[in-house]
Image 1 (tube, rainbow, N blue to C red):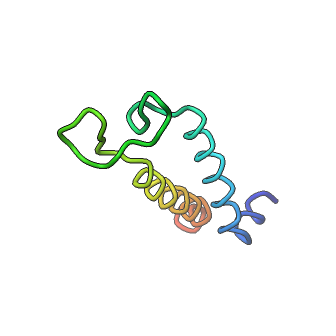
Image 2: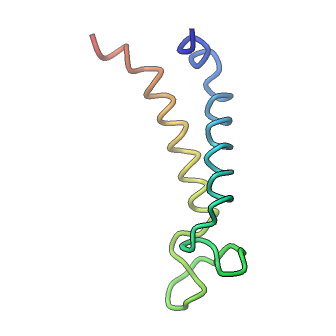
Length: 81
């Protein structure tokens, strides 16, 4: 039943999982992406206040990975006999 719901609502399930993971990311505020004041760091290298993993890049990668994982879950039984 759960699988059928996911198959019929791939975008909705992906969006909900993404929003939960994004909320966890914002709640934890990892120092790799945020400075001491809680503000997102800028993209770049060479300075202490810059990072190679800015928030916007992590959000884009996270959204793509969540959607891809949901698609793999939906199509898993088609290829495993």
